[in-house]
Length: 126
Image (cartoon, rainbow, N blue to C red):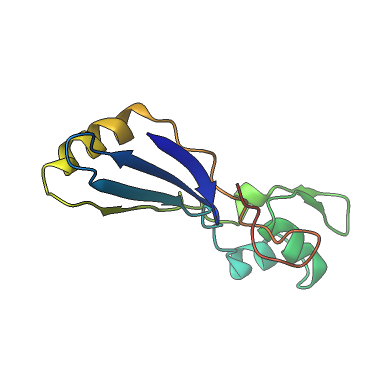
């Protein structure tokens, strides 16, 4: 068995000693989706539109004029977990059972960050 990571995905190659056939799998995990800012609720709490909205969207608490602190949880919906996609190329459908067993035993790496990296690229990788 040969394992590695390429392009933000975990891959696994299994060689069949009896016939030399090779099964290849890639498991990709996507970043979590951030919750949506309820702008009307933020305004009702006294948050002026602009940079403070961006901070709330990023999950930060903000201090509004008058000194009150508004927590992001007061006006940002809960986000969702990112998806997981598995791609399997195998010479015979019988390989899928061992693939599923192997996948169930593995711990996937953490999802990449949904926030842009300082270099301006996409989310963090593996």
